[in-house]
Length: 128
Image 1 (tube, helix red, strand yellow):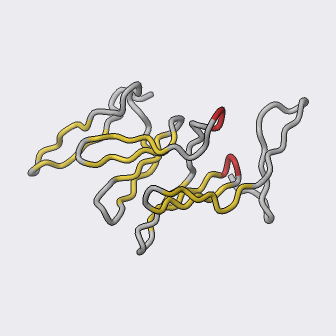
Image 2 (cartoon, helix red, strand yellow):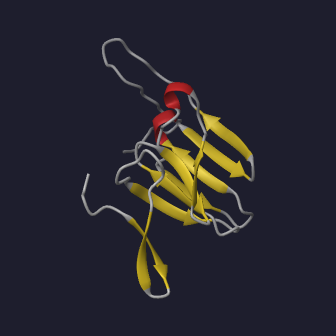
């Protein structure tokens, strides 16, 4: 990882480094969106979805078990305050509505002994 990777906040015209979540050294923040409550939602590569509000990090659990740290590929918020997460790795779209998490579509996993890993395909394919 890059040594200069950090997350910064403007405080009265000066940059202040925001500490990373616990157990993360120089996390790669893939995308940031804000919700109607002023909370920041962040995709952190290899760790999943996190929020930051009032200096406090919170991991947002979406999946369990071996899929716990799947990283979303994209996220956005809507005018109603919902947060939407797109997971290409498991063919799922997730809507977070307050304290409720809704998995709106989850496609089947495909596994093969000859080609290790997981594969997913949608109705019209999966783009890189």
